[in-house]
Image (cartoon, rainbow over all chains, first blue to last red; front, top):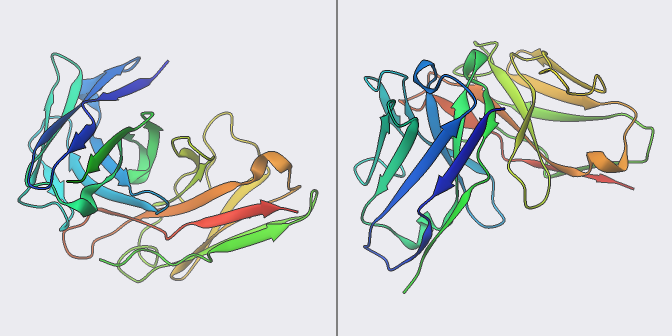
Length: 118
Length: 112
């Protein structure tokens, strides 16, 4: 079955960096576009970054553009999110997810908490 | 790019039907049939329940149905059950700015 497992979250001070990883299994990872989505505590969902299956097409939400970098390694079936210059407002649960038909998101990881605080 | 607009809360009694609206613009819902709906139980990841406006993934109850008219999409839950109590989010492909996808503001469904 399809599984997406995030790791790398934790507590970091403002201005710091973290790298999230997402290990995929149960499907042909290199065939799918992948997405990072976050959810601040008690808030709604925010689509933040997207990478095509080849890695050639990338998009970022304005809220993270210039600070976050998405990447993938199809040989390792893994998706990454390098987060730099972290701010208090980046505190959220970060989900790795798979894009499916019509840009829908058919599988989500369990999420990993990133807390930015001094 | 603004989030799609949903009512903050909707409630109903067991067995009733409820409808959640999701209002966007001509840059998203009004032009593309790429509206999805997600159910999020407390403490869990969201789950896809409707894609491409009105299609259900395998395994999703036919009590969930989707519809679109103009810039507004809607999700109807028929035969409401206590297990349907959750947060519901719509989402849509968008051509506005450079953002590819936008979520709704979310609706808390309460079963009375």
